[in-house]
Amino acid sequence: MMTPRNHGTAGVMPELAAAGAFVAGLAAQDFGALGGALAGGACLRALLPSGLREWAGARAIADRFARGFGDTKDFELIEAAVGEVGGRLHLHWRLRLRAERLGSGWFTVEQQAFADTDENGRIARLDLLCTGYRPEGGHD
Image (cartoon, rainbow, N blue to C red; front, side):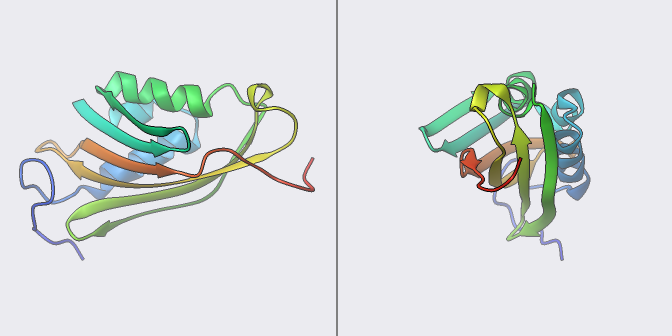
């Protein structure tokens, strides 16, 4: 159920369509589509294993996701969900990938994000928590 409580920008209700487009772009490794779900002045605040990082602008955020999840040998979306919690979008995804830059074998990464949308329904703010690339055992 959507609630009108203001926990972000402009007091608008979150747009599930933007969250779905963001996750679909990630799943397809279509970082242009992922960026299209973001407001031009969007802000990403991410707690990564290396510490807190921030990016501003749809292009910079899409480029960050491309660096993290592009250029892979294999890439699989294991699970994803989009919903609403307390007036904010909730996005979750778990990916499985192989990439030369990570070393041999498969890696799993899971991310949880909470987002706010702007008056045009695009994601304006994204707060993200990441597991980092976790090596899998027993998979070739």
